[in-house]
Image 1: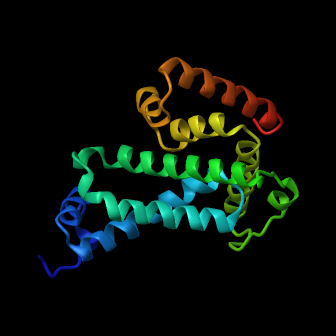
Image 2: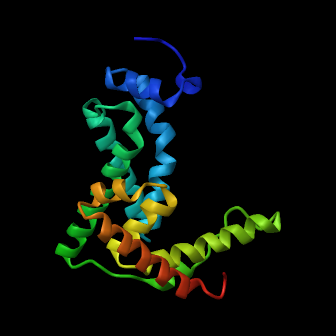
Length: 189
């Protein structure tokens, strides 16, 4: 094993070293992906504690299963699969516990820690919050499809594989999600 700082290594190298049991490489890999995983969950659910828990769970699964990744070039797709399955497990568990609820008032509480300087940063922050509220108003199946397509940049085929649906179903869900979002966001577009 190398005794090196991995911050300058490319992602494929870090993944390969992680698969071989290099703990420092795995730590670097988790450090690099944690923000993206957190962001994806923040578009899927509105509860901050759940977002943190889901992120931690997905990162733990990534660390445990990294050796099962067959093709390093497919890491992003593989990671999206873990995130999607983790979210599906979460929604099934909440539904079984009868905890499915949507509190729009909590979403509308604006906690701007960055401040509004410069003004452009504030505008983008507000638009991001408005878009998140609109996304969270979508049914889970539409939300997952649109987030994977628009925020993760996955192809219809990849989304189809991740969600175990046909390409036609994926296209339909994305189209319906876009239509609903356009209706909700029409005054901002």
